[in-house]
Length: 308
Image (cartoon, rainbow, N blue to C red; front, side, top):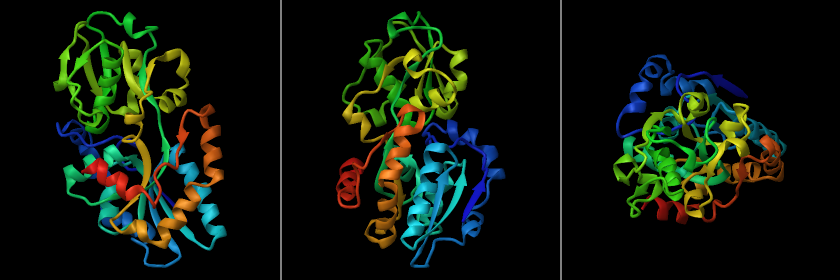
Protein backbone atom coordinates (compact mmCIF):
# COMPACT_ATOMS: atom_id res chain seq x y z
CA UNK A 1 0.00 0.00 0.00
CA UNK A 2 1.25 3.49 -0.88
CA UNK A 3 0.04 6.89 0.26
CA UNK A 4 0.93 10.23 -1.30
CA UNK A 5 0.83 13.29 0.92
CA UNK A 6 1.73 16.59 -0.73
CA UNK A 7 2.94 18.52 2.28
CA UNK A 8 4.32 22.00 1.76
CA UNK A 9 8.08 22.45 1.66
CA UNK A 10 10.99 21.16 -0.39
CA UNK A 11 11.52 17.47 -0.87
CA UNK A 12 14.96 17.56 0.65
CA UNK A 13 17.07 20.11 2.43
CA UNK A 14 18.04 20.70 6.01
CA UNK A 15 17.22 22.78 9.08
CA UNK A 16 19.10 26.07 9.44
CA UNK A 17 20.40 27.41 12.73
CA UNK A 18 19.73 30.84 11.34
CA UNK A 19 16.04 30.10 11.11
CA UNK A 20 15.80 31.02 7.43
CA UNK A 21 14.41 27.68 6.35
CA UNK A 22 12.11 27.45 9.36
CA UNK A 23 10.62 30.77 8.34
CA UNK A 24 10.13 29.61 4.78
CA UNK A 25 8.26 26.59 6.06
CA UNK A 26 5.89 28.59 8.23
CA UNK A 27 3.02 27.99 5.85
CA UNK A 28 3.87 24.32 5.78
CA UNK A 29 3.18 24.01 9.46
CA UNK A 30 -0.33 25.26 8.91
CA UNK A 31 -1.01 22.97 5.99
CA UNK A 32 0.92 19.82 6.85
CA UNK A 33 -0.70 16.91 8.53
CA UNK A 34 0.23 16.43 12.17
CA UNK A 35 2.55 13.56 12.98
CA UNK A 36 -0.48 11.75 14.32
CA UNK A 37 -2.20 12.31 10.99
CA UNK A 38 0.78 10.89 9.15
CA UNK A 39 0.74 7.83 11.36
CA UNK A 40 -2.94 7.34 10.70
CA UNK A 41 -2.19 7.27 6.96
CA UNK A 42 -0.46 3.92 7.30
CA UNK A 43 -1.60 2.84 10.72
CA UNK A 44 1.45 4.05 12.65
CA UNK A 45 4.69 2.22 13.36
CA UNK A 46 4.09 -1.34 12.33
CA UNK A 47 3.81 -3.92 15.08
CA UNK A 48 3.07 -6.59 12.49
CA UNK A 49 6.11 -8.83 12.15
CA UNK A 50 5.82 -8.89 8.37
CA UNK A 51 4.69 -5.29 7.72
CA UNK A 52 7.15 -2.41 7.47
CA UNK A 53 5.98 1.21 7.51
CA UNK A 54 8.17 3.74 5.75
CA UNK A 55 7.99 7.47 5.00
CA UNK A 56 9.80 8.51 1.80
CA UNK A 57 10.49 11.66 -0.20
CA UNK A 58 8.23 12.12 -3.22
CA UNK A 59 11.06 12.30 -5.74
CA UNK A 60 12.18 9.81 -8.39
CA UNK A 61 15.54 8.82 -6.81
CA UNK A 62 13.68 7.89 -3.62
CA UNK A 63 10.24 6.85 -4.80
CA UNK A 64 11.07 4.59 -7.73
CA UNK A 65 13.73 2.48 -5.96
CA UNK A 66 11.30 2.16 -3.05
CA UNK A 67 8.69 0.70 -5.39
CA UNK A 68 11.28 -1.78 -6.68
CA UNK A 69 12.15 -2.69 -3.10
CA UNK A 70 8.47 -3.12 -2.31
CA UNK A 71 8.13 -5.75 -5.02
CA UNK A 72 11.25 -7.58 -3.88
CA UNK A 73 10.04 -7.55 -0.28
CA UNK A 74 6.67 -8.94 -1.32
CA UNK A 75 8.44 -11.88 -2.96
CA UNK A 76 9.97 -12.64 0.45
CA UNK A 77 6.66 -12.36 2.28
CA UNK A 78 6.96 -8.77 3.51
CA UNK A 79 4.48 -5.91 3.11
CA UNK A 80 6.03 -2.47 2.71
CA UNK A 81 3.56 0.31 3.49
CA UNK A 82 4.82 3.63 2.16
CA UNK A 83 3.83 7.26 2.57
CA UNK A 84 5.36 9.69 0.06
CA UNK A 85 5.76 13.29 1.21
CA UNK A 86 7.41 16.54 0.15
CA UNK A 87 8.01 17.62 3.73
CA UNK A 88 11.53 17.50 5.24
CA UNK A 89 10.69 17.90 8.91
CA UNK A 90 8.16 15.23 9.80
CA UNK A 91 9.94 12.15 8.39
CA UNK A 92 12.45 12.21 11.24
CA UNK A 93 9.91 13.29 13.82
CA UNK A 94 7.47 10.47 13.13
CA UNK A 95 10.23 7.85 13.03
CA UNK A 96 11.68 9.15 16.29
CA UNK A 97 8.21 8.93 17.84
CA UNK A 98 7.79 5.32 16.68
CA UNK A 99 4.96 6.07 14.27
CA UNK A 100 6.95 4.73 11.31
CA UNK A 101 9.60 2.04 11.19
CA UNK A 102 11.98 3.89 8.85
CA UNK A 103 12.45 6.82 6.51
CA UNK A 104 14.33 7.36 3.26
CA UNK A 105 15.04 10.98 2.34
CA UNK A 106 18.30 12.29 3.82
CA UNK A 107 22.06 12.11 4.04
CA UNK A 108 23.82 11.59 7.35
CA UNK A 109 25.01 15.21 7.61
CA UNK A 110 21.39 16.36 7.53
CA UNK A 111 20.37 13.63 9.97
CA UNK A 112 23.02 14.65 12.50
CA UNK A 113 22.05 18.32 12.21
CA UNK A 114 18.35 17.54 12.52
CA UNK A 115 18.88 15.47 15.67
CA UNK A 116 20.95 18.27 17.22
CA UNK A 117 18.42 20.96 16.36
CA UNK A 118 15.27 19.05 17.26
CA UNK A 119 16.19 16.59 20.01
CA UNK A 120 15.19 13.61 17.91
CA UNK A 121 16.91 10.24 18.06
CA UNK A 122 17.15 8.71 14.60
CA UNK A 123 20.11 6.72 13.27
CA UNK A 124 21.20 5.50 9.82
CA UNK A 125 20.63 1.84 9.03
CA UNK A 126 22.31 1.46 5.62
CA UNK A 127 23.26 3.51 2.57
CA UNK A 128 21.52 3.65 -0.78
CA UNK A 129 23.13 6.36 -2.92
CA UNK A 130 25.37 9.40 -3.11
CA UNK A 131 24.33 12.46 -5.12
CA UNK A 132 27.32 14.39 -6.51
CA UNK A 133 27.06 18.16 -6.40
CA UNK A 134 28.92 21.11 -7.86
CA UNK A 135 28.96 24.76 -8.82
CA UNK A 136 26.98 25.36 -12.02
CA UNK A 137 26.45 28.35 -14.29
CA UNK A 138 24.40 29.17 -17.36
CA UNK A 139 26.50 32.29 -18.11
CA UNK A 140 30.13 31.49 -17.37
CA UNK A 141 32.49 28.73 -18.47
CA UNK A 142 34.83 28.53 -15.48
CA UNK A 143 35.29 29.68 -11.89
CA UNK A 144 37.99 32.08 -13.18
CA UNK A 145 35.40 33.72 -15.46
CA UNK A 146 33.16 34.74 -12.56
CA UNK A 147 33.21 38.57 -12.37
CA UNK A 148 33.78 40.89 -9.46
CA UNK A 149 30.69 40.94 -7.25
CA UNK A 150 29.25 37.80 -8.85
CA UNK A 151 26.10 36.50 -7.22
CA UNK A 152 26.51 32.90 -6.08
CA UNK A 153 23.56 30.81 -4.88
CA UNK A 154 24.25 28.55 -1.91
CA UNK A 155 22.02 26.03 -0.13
CA UNK A 156 20.29 27.68 2.82
CA UNK A 157 20.40 24.63 5.07
CA UNK A 158 23.27 24.18 7.48
CA UNK A 159 24.04 20.64 6.35
CA UNK A 160 24.66 21.67 2.72
CA UNK A 161 25.68 25.33 3.02
CA UNK A 162 29.40 24.63 3.31
CA UNK A 163 29.61 22.37 0.27
CA UNK A 164 29.46 25.26 -2.18
CA UNK A 165 31.89 27.32 -0.11
CA UNK A 166 34.38 24.44 0.00
CA UNK A 167 34.16 23.93 -3.75
CA UNK A 168 34.89 27.61 -4.38
CA UNK A 169 37.82 27.42 -1.99
CA UNK A 170 39.17 24.31 -3.74
CA UNK A 171 39.01 26.26 -7.01
CA UNK A 172 41.05 29.09 -5.48
CA UNK A 173 38.21 31.62 -5.55
CA UNK A 174 37.95 31.87 -1.74
CA UNK A 175 40.09 31.29 1.29
CA UNK A 176 38.47 29.55 4.25
CA UNK A 177 39.21 28.29 7.73
CA UNK A 178 40.63 24.91 6.75
CA UNK A 179 40.12 23.52 10.26
CA UNK A 180 36.34 23.47 9.77
CA UNK A 181 34.82 20.28 8.34
CA UNK A 182 32.62 20.82 5.30
CA UNK A 183 29.48 19.97 7.30
CA UNK A 184 30.13 22.97 9.59
CA UNK A 185 31.42 25.50 7.06
CA UNK A 186 29.50 28.75 6.61
CA UNK A 187 30.11 32.24 5.30
CA UNK A 188 31.54 33.14 8.69
CA UNK A 189 34.49 30.84 7.90
CA UNK A 190 35.49 32.69 4.72
CA UNK A 191 38.79 34.44 5.44
CA UNK A 192 39.30 36.00 2.00
CA UNK A 193 36.85 36.80 -0.80
CA UNK A 194 39.03 38.60 -3.40
CA UNK A 195 36.26 39.02 -5.98
CA UNK A 196 33.69 40.10 -3.37
CA UNK A 197 31.22 37.39 -4.32
CA UNK A 198 27.70 38.01 -3.05
CA UNK A 199 26.14 34.86 -1.61
CA UNK A 200 22.41 34.29 -1.91
CA UNK A 201 20.99 31.46 0.18
CA UNK A 202 18.16 29.52 -1.42
CA UNK A 203 16.39 26.23 -0.86
CA UNK A 204 18.72 23.75 -2.51
CA UNK A 205 15.84 22.08 -4.35
CA UNK A 206 15.23 25.39 -6.15
CA UNK A 207 18.80 26.07 -7.30
CA UNK A 208 18.29 24.91 -10.91
CA UNK A 209 15.34 27.29 -11.21
CA UNK A 210 17.37 30.19 -9.78
CA UNK A 211 20.43 29.67 -12.02
CA UNK A 212 19.16 32.09 -14.70
CA UNK A 213 19.06 34.85 -12.05
CA UNK A 214 22.57 34.40 -10.61
CA UNK A 215 26.09 34.09 -11.97
CA UNK A 216 26.52 30.59 -10.53
CA UNK A 217 25.06 28.31 -7.91
CA UNK A 218 25.63 25.21 -5.85
CA UNK A 219 23.36 22.32 -6.83
CA UNK A 220 23.07 18.56 -6.99
CA UNK A 221 24.02 17.22 -10.40
CA UNK A 222 20.78 15.25 -10.61
CA UNK A 223 18.67 18.38 -10.08
CA UNK A 224 20.57 20.12 -12.88
CA UNK A 225 19.90 17.15 -15.17
CA UNK A 226 16.25 16.91 -14.13
CA UNK A 227 15.84 20.61 -14.98
CA UNK A 228 16.98 19.87 -18.52
CA UNK A 229 20.49 21.32 -18.31
CA UNK A 230 23.57 19.45 -19.49
CA UNK A 231 25.64 18.69 -16.39
CA UNK A 232 28.99 18.63 -18.21
CA UNK A 233 28.31 21.88 -20.05
CA UNK A 234 27.08 23.85 -17.04
CA UNK A 235 29.42 22.52 -14.34
CA UNK A 236 32.23 24.86 -13.27
CA UNK A 237 33.49 22.38 -10.67
CA UNK A 238 32.18 19.07 -9.34
CA UNK A 239 32.71 17.43 -5.96
CA UNK A 240 35.49 14.88 -6.08
CA UNK A 241 36.48 14.37 -2.46
CA UNK A 242 36.11 11.11 -0.54
CA UNK A 243 35.88 13.04 2.74
CA UNK A 244 32.86 14.90 1.40
CA UNK A 245 31.21 11.82 -0.05
CA UNK A 246 30.62 10.07 3.29
CA UNK A 247 28.63 12.83 5.07
CA UNK A 248 26.44 13.26 2.02
CA UNK A 249 25.58 9.63 1.48
CA UNK A 250 21.80 9.04 1.43
CA UNK A 251 20.54 6.47 3.93
CA UNK A 252 17.53 4.59 5.18
CA UNK A 253 17.16 5.49 8.86
CA UNK A 254 15.24 4.33 11.93
CA UNK A 255 15.21 4.58 15.69
CA UNK A 256 18.13 3.24 17.76
CA UNK A 257 17.94 -0.54 17.74
CA UNK A 258 16.18 -0.72 14.38
CA UNK A 259 19.43 -1.92 12.81
CA UNK A 260 19.14 -5.14 14.83
CA UNK A 261 15.70 -6.10 13.55
CA UNK A 262 14.55 -8.50 10.84
CA UNK A 263 12.72 -5.58 9.23
CA UNK A 264 15.99 -3.71 8.78
CA UNK A 265 17.66 -6.79 7.31
CA UNK A 266 14.80 -7.25 4.87
CA UNK A 267 14.93 -3.58 3.83
CA UNK A 268 18.68 -3.68 3.30
CA UNK A 269 18.43 -6.80 1.14
CA UNK A 270 15.83 -5.07 -1.06
CA UNK A 271 17.37 -1.59 -1.28
CA UNK A 272 20.91 -2.88 -1.84
CA UNK A 273 19.75 -5.36 -4.46
CA UNK A 274 21.04 -5.62 -8.00
CA UNK A 275 17.66 -4.38 -9.26
CA UNK A 276 17.97 -1.11 -7.31
CA UNK A 277 21.64 -0.76 -8.26
CA UNK A 278 20.68 -1.03 -11.93
CA UNK A 279 17.93 1.56 -11.59
CA UNK A 280 20.45 4.12 -10.36
CA UNK A 281 22.91 3.18 -13.10
CA UNK A 282 20.21 3.89 -15.71
CA UNK A 283 18.75 7.06 -14.14
CA UNK A 284 19.93 10.24 -15.88
CA UNK A 285 22.88 8.33 -17.36
CA UNK A 286 24.28 7.54 -13.93
CA UNK A 287 24.06 11.05 -12.41
CA UNK A 288 23.53 9.34 -9.04
CA UNK A 289 25.94 6.82 -7.54
CA UNK A 290 24.41 3.76 -5.90
CA UNK A 291 26.40 2.80 -2.81
CA UNK A 292 26.22 -0.05 -0.33
CA UNK A 293 29.16 1.30 1.69
CA UNK A 294 27.07 1.53 4.87
CA UNK A 295 25.56 -1.76 5.98
CA UNK A 296 23.87 -3.05 9.11
CA UNK A 297 27.20 -4.60 9.99
CA UNK A 298 29.29 -1.40 9.93
CA UNK A 299 26.85 1.51 10.21
CA UNK A 300 27.07 1.72 14.00
CA UNK A 301 30.79 2.47 13.80
CA UNK A 302 30.29 4.89 10.89
CA UNK A 303 27.63 6.80 12.80
CA UNK A 304 29.58 6.85 16.07
CA UNK A 305 32.62 8.29 14.33
CA UNK A 306 30.61 10.85 12.37
CA UNK A 307 28.21 12.01 15.07
CA UNK A 308 30.75 11.80 17.90
